[in-house]
Image (cartoon, rainbow, N blue to C red; front, side, top):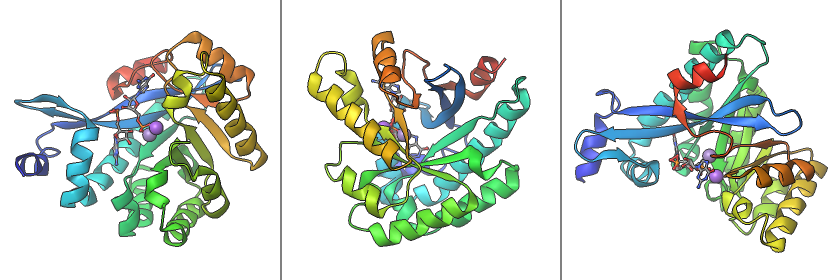
Length: 253
Ligand code: G
Ligand code: G
Ligand code: MN
Ligand code: NA
């Protein structure tokens, strides 16, 4: 209850901010986008992880106001990247959306407003959903995701592979990409089963025309084997930690 009360005014007090983790294209090593990750700098408790406060925001309904603020900020920052990048190569921003945000049905409108207000091209915005956000509600979820995709926004399934029913979702839920959960990537060099699963996910996704992103790349060897197996994109501490927008802008030069 305490946390919920404090979270209520946290955005307006400037305690919440977005950090950006770069995403690289494996074929040529170019940075092509970034994932937006929310951080709460609490005045007494210090940095609080989203794994703690996103649940609070979800259960209290605060996510209904926080979600649109995150979307708008990420879109605005991504417009700035485009202007800062000398090469002109376009960059995407990837925004996490929680199950409640999807279920509320406001997401398409909130996305449309963020794009209109900031001028970001729709195809530069990616929405990340976990498998749990679509489980049990595939019909409703599919309708919402189709609306987003009609704008040109890309939809990625996050933490892919952990939900057991991942493969069957791809038949019923329209997505542009899957992000292989970092628990698979962690042991990809040591555990032949994890390598086999990762390779199979890549092959299956590609046969469906779906992009594959690997998360949690912490070592060069992981990067090399993912590239060899034809994975499209990767992120992780070896490639870059999440950083403030100011720091991220300096990476673009
Ligand atoms: O950066 P990291 O530990 O901090 O993020 C943990 C999880 O919190 C992420 O996997 C993501 O699902 C969730 N998360 C991070 N930022 C946001 C956000 O802006 N909105 C939502 N709904 N979830 C987020
Ligand atoms: O659930 P989601 O995939 O959106 O969460 C991303 C989370 O993973 C963030 O908390 C981010 O800080 C974290 N993360 C990003 N790169 C790495 C990595 O290489 N290793 C580990 N352990 N965590 C990472
Ligand atoms: Mn994510
Ligand atoms: Na993930």
